[in-house]
Structures are given as structure tokens and as C-alpha cells.
Image 1 (tube, one colour):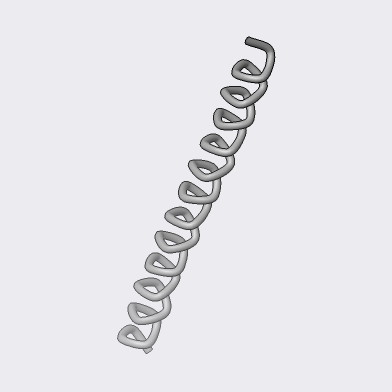
Image 2 (image 1 turned 45 degrees about the horizontal axis):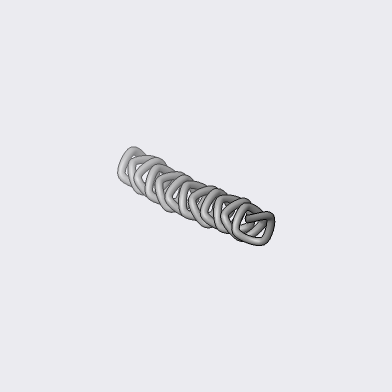
Length: 46
């Protein structure tokens, strides 16, 4: 029972780390996209 609890806790930690990495990756992608749109609009304005 203790081994199962420890395994489930490790699984929860791993899943939370994976979801955190995924959210950070999507945030980086959106930031890159917004920066690209911003720079392209600046180039169009000048």
C-alpha cells in the first residue's frame, strides 16, 4: 500500500511537471507569435 501511494505521488509529480512544461512551451509559442506580428507591423509602418 505504501509503495502504491509513493508510485501514485510520483506519477502526480511527473504529470504536473509535464503539464507545466507544456504550458510554458505554449506561452513561449504565443510570445514568439505576438513578437513576430509586432515586428512585422513595425516594418509595415516604417
